[in-house]
Length: 234
Image (cartoon, rainbow, N blue to C red; front, side, top):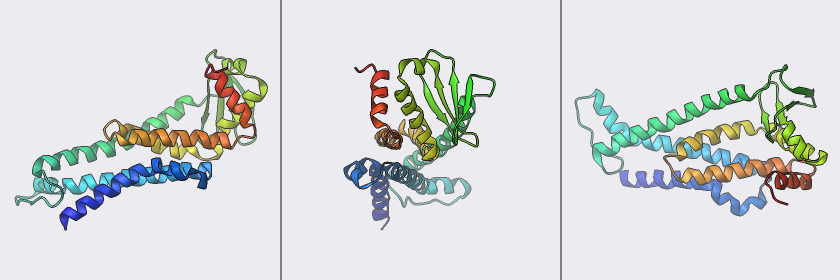
């Protein structure tokens, strides 16, 4: 029974991790942003189940710290070594999620542009900020006061329709609520340094987010031209 339980947890965890990748086969059945939310939901489920599996593996060793009795391994072979490895990985997973959340919040605070810096134009639902920088750059800042930030270097590289398409792309990230999805990806990226399969999960999820933002713009041809121009593709 215990062996069957361990196999079920392992297979289920692996399956949830692989779901965002497998979903590419039926992407046509999902709207672009539905695909984003699907990736996020399955990634969260995979992370939670991975943490639960690691904690269950570590229970006998951890319980032995507070009791004088001995606990037989009831989950996975390996005795004490596997228990301590599981406890360490469980701490790493939980710590990575916490640190990623803190870093994301701090990054948003750093990226927000104060009113006295650059040119600010209040648009419908967001504030467009233009910074006097040569580096071509565009990004969105979520929160109570949403911003789309572009640089003069970007404006100089693109035509008016292309620049409008880039702004619309960044605004779409705000409208579609990609802040939550990016927060999950930040945690997954930290864990991917240890759990290799998550690297492909993160890559697939990031592609889905950018595709959803592109699909929400009115002029997709201008968006493609802007990407090609910025990428140095004629």
